[in-house]
Length: 352
View 1 (cartoon, helix red, strand yellow):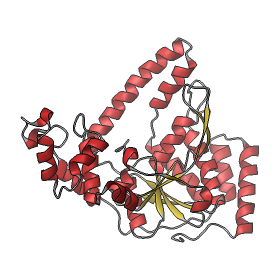
View 2: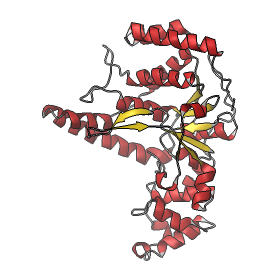
View 3: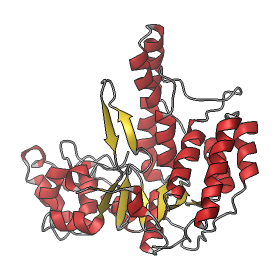
View 4: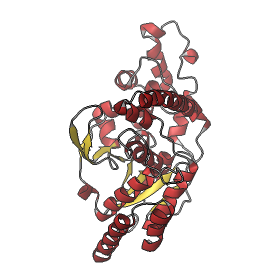
């Protein structure tokens, strides 16, 4: 998803303690997808209740968000709104990949290939509006704030950071940097010991901090040029230029003062030397894409209100409604709320 800027970014390992007393704007859909993808049976079958409703996102959200709060972090989950028309190509491609993965999944299951079945099952992950609503309801009972974005959640989360309502964005994607967030935290929801896919090996994953100022300084570029790099190599909102990745794109944008100048440099490359600028595939709507990153649809009037936690409603929601283990949920919640009483509760929204 999004543009992969890992090769141009210096990520420093941090701990949850580094984020204590900080407010973090969490890309909710990105995080819930990670839970739905990873929390499964060995053959890839998703967790579900007796009614066939998926519950992996609720399980991950419950245990991970409580872990953050216990570490002194104040999360704000920012949910996506209506996707922009610019994203339709990406959405269509994702749906096509899911359909292809579903076919491969059935083949793997029929052949008893559990390892392949799990891989393809993960690729079929879907997050429905009903699942997003159930996540919001659980967060409310846990006393964790939610924000509904009018469009892209990462754009709204970035706005919260720019307005000093949050310290950083949390997402596996890099788009929040393109939207102007000063800090991005990766691996927030995947921290811990993890098995390497298709290998009998384990690695320890730590949270990582990426700072926009450091990305710009280390590559000798400005924010506009970072957006140009993304557009050249491809984003969720344009397909980019075939054969141009972030590192090649960096060479094209360094010292450029306009994207027209970048296109002129692009045309000097052998594969594009005979092509008119407006015919370069992947850059047809570059002005619209650039403006989308610079001025995305956001709700500038949104108010962040931390709901009052309700232990009994949280238990009833998970145990009675979605059939989670009563003993484990009750034990976890009781210990959590007892710890919160002793520590004085969560940090205040906006605390740095």
